[in-house]
Length: 280
Image (cartoon, rainbow, N blue to C red; front, side, top):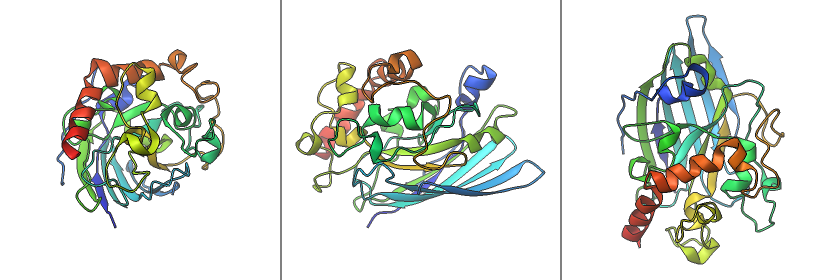
């Protein structure tokens, strides 16, 4: 099947919400569930093992195991996973909040409000929260790069992902990472080894932003895994009030506005479409 090796490190942008930093400083390289256990040392070192799986019931067939090492304000992550859509980009991020009062977690199938058998982006956001860190292969790792698919890991012909990155965080940010979790996006619902419109139609998230022609397969969450905190399936405490799983209410939380920036302002949709055209 398919294997992901993801080794990442957190961005300066992770600490924006807490520390008022103006951008992310990344220094890394690219090589190619739902719970976590961790060990801590008084020296400021911590290691977490995360198990990312399809908690949503989206039948993605994907799963990953991530090892995250935090040393002071430096983060390193290594992820191995299987079952990803081959030759396709997979957007993936740290989600949640550094605010301990907002207990975001991985969604389950109960988040499927329209009953279509898939938890899409709009339905998942209320549970897993906003993007805090974009797991890009190079350059910016802030939420602004959430759909920078030209810098997201691409699965090989067997559906394997291989990603390594180390990023320095602003002072005092490293110990906040344990409040977050990882979501990986992109699945192959009809088993033809690519993203297309035949399986699930257009991405309702992209379409709500005025961007047409993006398959929902490309944007739906495939795996999710917590670093620590809430158990899978528990409702967020003090989280974003996003209503019934549609785009209504997300604007007030800044989530939809962020998505618009990523898809339109940053040229994300164009990049997505270009890469999808190449794989067809």
